[in-house]
Length: 635
Image (tube, rainbow, N blue to C red):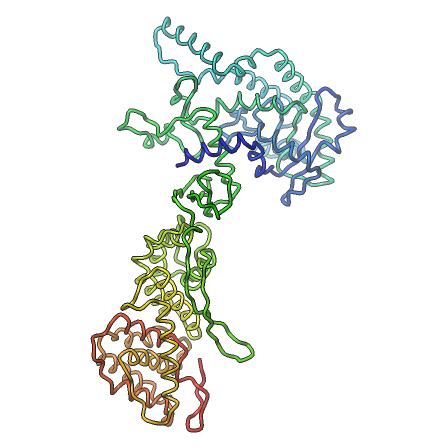
């Protein structure tokens, strides 16, 4: 699919070449534009309008000049910021790759120490004025030797002298016919004289340039790079860049081949099959390397990766089918989804034949908010239609806001928030969550949503402490909403219906308990709901600093056996009986009713759901005192 992306990017750049530079960022440093036809003194007269300083805040002095520097810098920089792709090898002091520009780290030649004050190690990292001039001379000599290096891309396989001469003749003819601009540049006297003049200008004026740079540094304290460009047409920069990039765009020239009128090879970037990594070769296939691209395709691939990198790493980027740079997510076309790692390699790439916005989502939900005036929590029905909003709720209440950064493809480590159990749940379900919340596909999440959200609720209960029940109840309502959205029923009841039934069950039970008359349980559902209510109330009597899951775990584990469940409730009552008010009628009536009731049917999934809801819901037994009852305080 990355090949499809590359072709789309090529088409987009053909329509609008500014795409190359819209997201291009200049590195920190000082950028200077000089006219080599003028003397240094003449350049100095207008230099205030010929340089910009890029700092961490990207404060550009001259906006129009900044745009020009973007283009010149693009055509003068080392591929992939890789020192192995430099022309200045093995020295690696000059970072530019054309004769039209001079890049060097300021600490390499703008020295604030004398040679005798430096250690041997420090001296190796810098160039003193005479050494710098010599290094510039050697750099231009390397460029001259480098010029015709593109000829080596043509595979010469013959061993006999006669056959080899024939192949060399065919090579020259191939480049003359298919790359005439490169061949003509080799002996172009105008180009050669220009490059010679620029070299001469740099060497003869370097002392004055250094003095001026030091004065500017004292005034502005620029750092990192000094980048000097010479004022020639941008087409000249493009030509020099092509001479360089044709030779350096491939990983290993040994894998280059001729395909009609094109040279093809293994592109550099996130792929290598060098001698240190021979295991990446395709040993069992006719072709040893995974792909070969033409020069233009390889350059487009390199630019595409840079463009994608500018949009962020470890995030999921989305692009429509028809146009790579189309960011309108309301499009009815399909979408590509991808993510980059630290090295800008694509670690996740998926093709979805529809847009998530075409797949409508409706999640009925009950939001819990604290009313400061009434000093109580209130529940409000709402519906979620936006997947981004839904992701926010899922991340907050199920995963404690831990789905950040590269959560889809990166490592999930256990920490103070992520327990081993939660880690396991995330690793098992993250692709399904991503498919549903971002891509609009529910096929993976639907079969697991019931079990998955129940495990998440259980984990929240296990790890929660006193005072965290409201957050868990919010997560529980989110579970019911997701079940409803995905059309997953619990004993033929939809999630929204269960929410409504819980409200009805709470209010009816609350009303019946308010009567001083005899209270009786109406059905099995009310039995399990009330058992959950009693479990929480009894556990809340504990004087432990943290009320953990262990306090009511025995009762919850016995939900499938009503008699065992009642035994566990009685155990809890005995343990915390000293904290219970003997004349608290609501509790007494409810407890007696539960202990005296025997369910008619086997425990169903809905019964278990209602007991869990009873445990988490607003508790019926934390009520302000009535005429006959002692005051109970909610916790």
